[in-house]
Image (cartoon, rainbow, N blue to C red; front, side, top):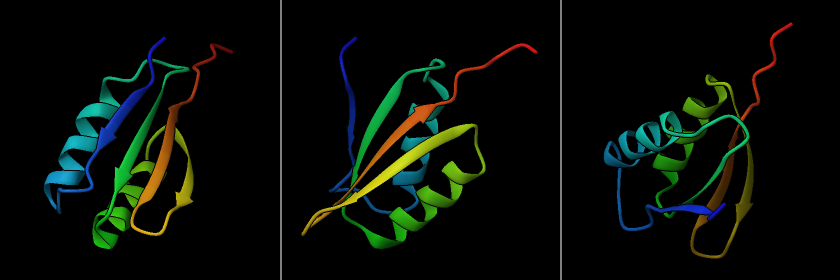
Length: 78
């Protein structure tokens, strides 16, 4: 499976959040997405959104941007 990278370093809110929502909705369980963000306000909005969804994420701060690795939780029927 090819990695999915969404480079939003040149984008600002609200476009960043809209693009993340679209990309996250397209993820299948077990798939992951790497989001690159430079705007701190966008990062906060995206992290709030992800926290409300069935998604997990890991944050890596770089000197000029933030990288979020987002993965969709696998669904289990119990």
